[in-house]
Image 1 (cartoon, rainbow, N blue to C red):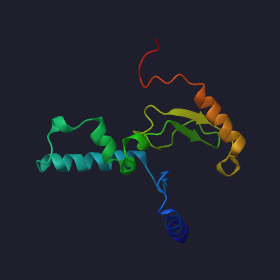
Image 2 (image 1 turned 45 degrees about the vertical axis):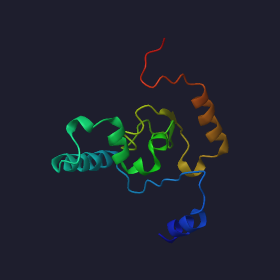
Image 3 (image 1 turned 180 degrees about the vertical axis):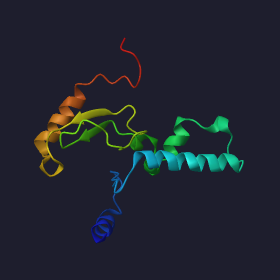
Length: 132
């Protein structure tokens, strides 16, 4: 925990980048917690079921603190040769491009990052729309 505190202190005045650490993170638990909070607000009369939309759920997720534009990544990189999301950012990655690397995280280097970015740049992003 000291490393996290040191990193916070060293970067607390920075404003150009957002760093999120997903330590012990569970996408399913994140969605469940958001739903529980929304249900509680509806029960208390603070919102109507008609108020529940994509943006509200996105704001209620753990990543919502970063804002809607940052909380849904454009690219999700999965290392270690696994071809699954493994319960990671299930809601947030709905329209993310996925890159799978056989490299283990400690060996994921600048060259592999460059391959991930090149792969991303070659994609035709349609955000759920059909190809014209």
